[in-house]
Image 1 (tube, rainbow, N blue to C red):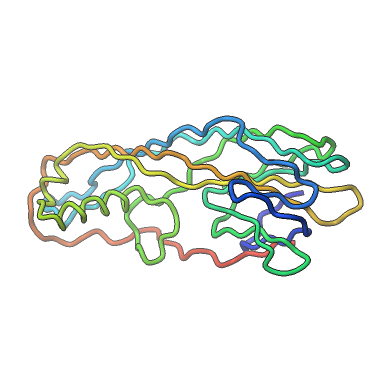
Image 2: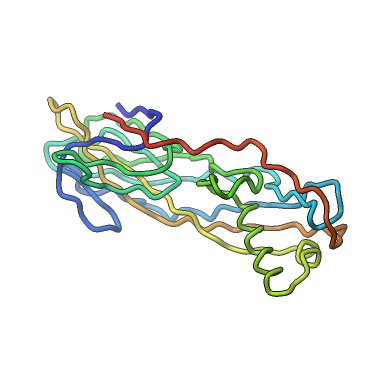
Length: 239
């Protein structure tokens, strides 16, 4: 019943929205994560063959483990669970026009689970690959997760305080960040064409391990350009 489309504004039937920590529309009692999401670990390092600090090319080394997602969709009496989606972003219900509510998010779903559509309460199990950008990219259009860019921000702060870029790049280090995710569940009633939704937001800890490069010296050199950049998708509408 669920189908991803290129636009990010989902039209749904009207109903009362609840607390910001988790929202519902008509026929949806609750959407929830049943287990704490595990931390995502990224290993990053300098992949440039040059040894000057300005010629660095910080990138993700290898791929992180996928997220194991356990949740549930609970519908009201007389309604059935239709499916669920996992978004690696914030997503919320907004009554942008009457009588429809909308799912508002800048992301595409990372995973989708179709449910039997016969029961009021359904468990949701997903194994979700983590979406991320390999390198630093272009900060003007990068709306996704970019561990290398997070490292570059810390490096810029270090240099702004009078520190040496080369000293920083030679140090093996670890730091933490977080990303927002949302589980979206859908309910329906037989004979009615529209889906109704609820959301469950959560934060996932990011652990970023940087492998220090002892070759690095202060100096200038050509920086690696952004590779594989994609323009962010515009709003999508799904009926």
